[in-house]
Amino acid sequence: MATRAPASTLRQIPSGIWMLGCVSLLMDISSEIIHSLLPVFMVTTLGASALAVGLIEGAAEATALIVKVFSGVLSDYLGKRKTLAVLGYGLGALSKPLFAVAPGVGTILTARLSDRIGKGIRGAPRDALVADIAPAHLRGAAFGLRQALDTVGAFLGPLIAIGLMMLWANDFRAIFWVAVVPGVLSVALLAFGVKEPQTHTGDKRVNPIRRVNLARLGPAYWGVVAVGTAFALARFSEAFLILRVQQEGLPLFMAPLVLVTMNAVFAVTAYPFGKLADNCSHDKLLVAGLAVLIVADTVLAVGSHWSIALVGVALWGLHMGMTQGLLATMVADAAPADLRGTAFGVFNLASGLALLAASVMAGWLWDRHGAAATFHAGAGFCVLTIALLIHRLRNRPASGAATR
Image (tube, rainbow, N blue to C red; front, side, top):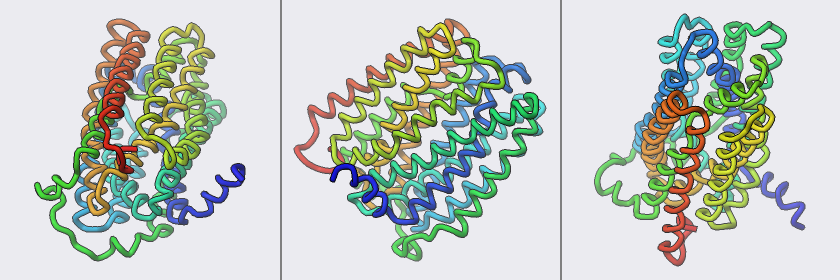
């Protein structure tokens, strides 16, 4: 029966995937308590401009994605994913106290870069570990489940931040201290609750970035990299969503509601769309996600009240649910098993550079031409990405999972 299929699929997903999802959930609670308040904290308390927010957020997120290339390559070389993942989650946890004591924007930048370096170290090995643990026929569902649990944390974090803002009269710094606790719990759960598959615990591999190995990342993989890079240009830091909704009149203590809304939709949709990706064209599903992002950008550009802007935020969350696990699945399907860490790393390097450019451009457009120009530009890059995907669909091979 169709109604019983989701439960059956969930029962088939290995316990290691559930553990990795809970690790992500705890770290996202920690991170999103801070990140849901950070743009407002920087602008209202530290006096930062929108361009400064864009530079800090763009540099931070791009750093995470760029670092992934090195951690991914190293995880392939060593054949060990978990050690690097623990190191990355540990660095993320250690960065959290810096936000609470930051006297100015410089310390915030240091904290964000440290946090994102940790994310970069853990990201590619963790994604490769998911691909290693999950059976091939459940890979989309496994990535979707991990993403869904991750996003539950991203939903709970801002909710906690709202409650504490109300309870503690907008005391940003005290709330930032609370974020330290789930970060530490996340590291402990990964260290003691996740076992690495035996296939990656002892085999030392040759250098993954040798020309002969990189040549094995064929046209299908590089096509996914091109699409992911264009897609990153269509997106920018979620800090601008928070600033946009607050600009339309959202009360200060309710600022985390923006990420609550986005991540609630993201969490609900990530697993169903991840499961759908196992049975449909990846490119067509990505086109649908980009179309949703165009609508989200349009609503955010023209909305004249914070409640309308929140509709755009919800649509942004829907596009995330449709595309984020999907992109990871496309990379995993297109890459050889022993080069998945490298494949995720290179993919994230290209995406990271594009995301940095997108966030800096978003901040510059916001300061010079207003918020609407920022979101119109994002919609324009969506159109370009859709054109690239249509080209892929017209020229794809007749068969092959990597190009479904």
